[in-house]
Length: 91
Image (cartoon, rainbow, N blue to C red; front, side, top):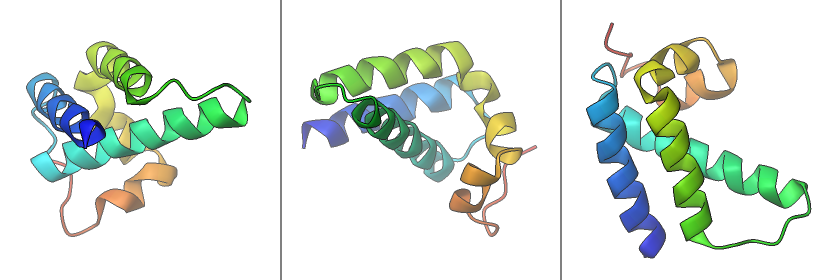
């Protein structure tokens, strides 16, 4: 439940930083960044520090790169297909 609250707040932050993403795309981006962080952290053999740690890292990524995430997604096949062809990025 706390994770969903964090992700809601991060989605709103991303929408403030990047007006080229729809709300659904922003939410998907947040979820993908969150999952990538957690899986990378786990693969590195680190102890899970809870959703607070994931929230801090994803927030930092959004603060630093949020306004350009639409370009990254559009050019990265790992993510592009997850946003769906029926809901194209707003360019």
